[in-house]
Image 1 (spheres, rainbow, N blue to C red):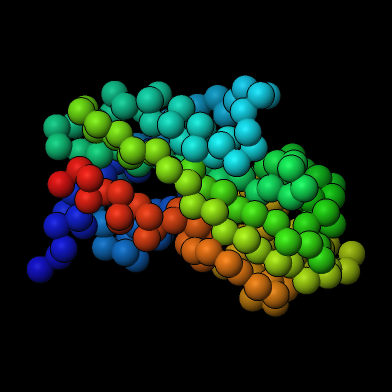
Image 2: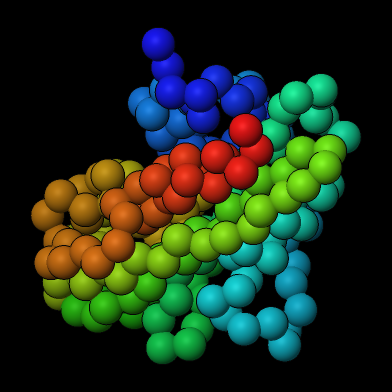
Length: 193
């Protein structure tokens, strides 16, 4: 028998294959109903608050998809280094530039999550520190050309080559770096029981 939290019907408002994979692997009950939402945010917003702000913005825009008893789940991830947000790369040159900045540095991955239903909501963030080893230009080009990380904040995925070969240390949740802090989602969903 499943724990009660896993039986809460979730509407995942995301096109991310990684978020879908993580929810499936954890045994959650969910359906996908994605919507394109403008990802702009106020310039005055603290950088660590951007992901949560965007997750809540996506949830409110997608709320009309909810059916009785369902909980909406939205998420957004940003990569932070030296007070700057590194979003999804615009093209190959941008992906290379981002990875050159992250190489041989410690950065943060912040994934904001919003859970809401008709009566209540919870917004929270997972924060993970990632220490990347030095990357040569050849390694960066190999990664970008073979894995094409154009849909990934910070131009990389922890579950691909860079994660396997070039991550020196992780502090925080691995799933947060993949795009969804599953342990925190599980905890916060208990509020909806």
